Length: 328
Ligand code: NCD
Image 1 (cartoon, protein in one colour):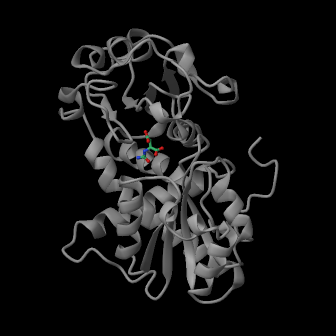
Image 2 (tube, protein in one colour):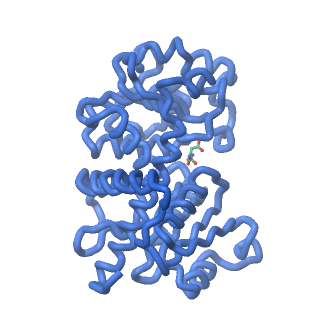
Image 3 (tube, helix red, strand yellow):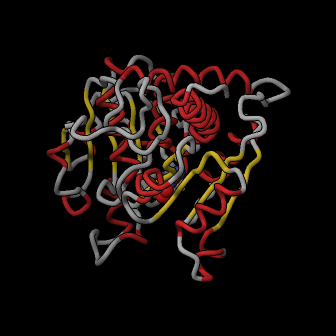
């Protein structure tokens, strides 16, 4: 299934040159991303947190959808690689004056931008842009519609590897609004590629996508069964802005059935780690005492996001230069 078509994310030497989705990538590449990110975490612990890998190169953040964590951590990642960084809030710029996306892109390329980080409400947007950019320009997907959010999934994998250990020993449960979540889709794919022992989703039927059979997951409708023996609990936000109609009776009832509280967390292994991609909704999917508690790694995820994005940006930049044989 994964190799149906030519994977434009890999150059002729099999190196990463765009990062659009986890489909078609193998365990070796994902492990290389995690190992590279580990080395950038060490850089982040120094007083001087930058390295010259992208000196003189320009990274442009193209965000067609609002974002705080993802945009700012991409910005910091690019700055720590010593790149020049442009951040465009597209909703308030050229395209609202009638300029087409491709014309905006061509102008940014003319300014010398070689890496684009794209977030868009439409599934497939980053892939479309990657097909349009000139050779040697890399595109990184920062979230497209409900489709995929591969850098978030990789920072989640880094968090898991650093705090819960080897994937093959781990049972992981993803809880909540799976239907609207690009994060859940990318996490499931990443966990399967990395060989997790078991991937579970826990949600009411109304918040499960109909095509889940295409993913290697076990489905649960109850926290007591779904969280039993799990090592990692990943909570998701109810994505109200994407919901058409009432998919849950009320937030209160959702919290009572699917909220992560000290009581529901006790169904998981005693040392299970708790994660959430953010933004968290306290008292809707997670209790404050759990979000701020000793098992929570929610803020570690944010810090690791910088290292993972540094790894992906630098690998894509190098993959683009290597494919033409020129020096980077
Ligand atoms: C997620 C997203 O935008 O898909 N957040 C993020 O990137 N940290 C999840 C969400 O919005 O709930």
